[in-house]
Image 1 (cartoon, rainbow, N blue to C red):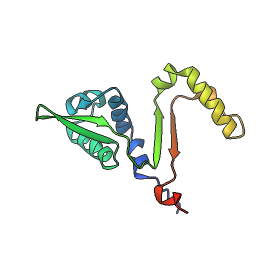
Image 2: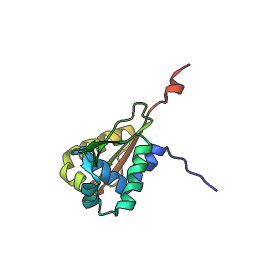
Image 3: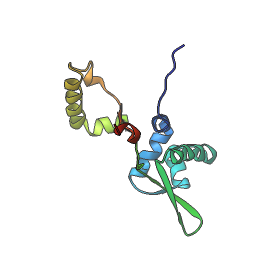
Length: 136
């Protein structure tokens, strides 16, 4: 049996709803009511996703008027991974930039990427050397 191990951060952002939450928070702080409208998730499901993002250090919050939580995206201090997720609308809106990225990835991959013109969305995962690996 083959097992696949991914970091908690990658697992957290790989879920489509969580990716949608993080994308929305790039635009600014949002309340749960706003995030419900954006994601279409019930409040119960939304809190589950918000908690998952908060547990890996990708999400923080502040209180507004002592009654409303405003969520914001955070960058962890000791990141192990960055996941860049481009939805179909991102790919369409930034077609030229994606073509440049695909060319560079083709060079890094030592050959042209297959069917590069048919890309509809992208997920790129960058891993960092952990602090304890840097010593020595």
